[in-house]
Length: 352
Image (tube, rainbow, N blue to C red; front, side):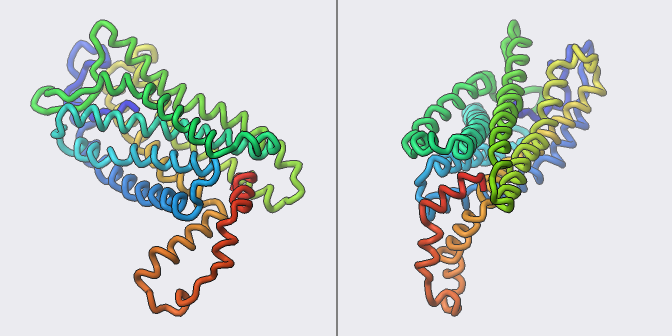
């Protein structure tokens, strides 16, 4: 991501003869971003923590899909944990120092790229389970899931390095900022490189993988005799593609226009102000996707909802209602049937 709260006066990126006043953009950020970031943080944190607790306590991380879901939730949490700091920054100035600026930028980027890469792995995992079921029995193991997850984290770190290296805290005018500062001689190269990297890795690559894999999945499911199961799986597939596209495409388009303003004839003060405001809104919209991930990849599944019910019954509700008749007797047969490996694998195989 290319997070930056604009300073009140900024003409660095636009090649203008006179400084462009960004007071309105800063005021919009101070009013809009803190409550939105707080809402995204709270809802996303609760959802992803629940996913992690259920995967560990109920599903025991017994399949490759569980490993990928677990790492996706970790990626989203890394991303979300930085939002309170960005919310404070949007409302005030950067007060956390240069080390925290680089650290939080690193967590933000690693969480972002990690989330994208694990969504891609989950898509490929679902494709193998449905289209190449025989091969998947040998390939979709926990060991392979752990190995590919480790490689994915390394790739996410490397993809984040330019953002970490070039981002720093410094005093600009009367305020301290935490923002990218590219070398003067290579400014346009690195700025363009960062934008194209974001668009290719954050939009083009995942959508390409989704289209290819889900086309194969749909082709296989359309031959499925169980119409109810087929229709539910197809609805979920389209939901995953449409939601990802709707949440991240606007940000990538605005980021592209912002970076290449001169090429599109938008390098004047009014347009740059509008683009800065647009990038704040669309980036916040994109951030909320990590709140939707637990719903799409976990809670939509019927089996996962049963795990959630059992988890709340065993660990949450009993603490507040120890003497309620419904909790005086456990149903081990029902719980064990929910926990069976075969039902978990069946859930994954149809993408539910």
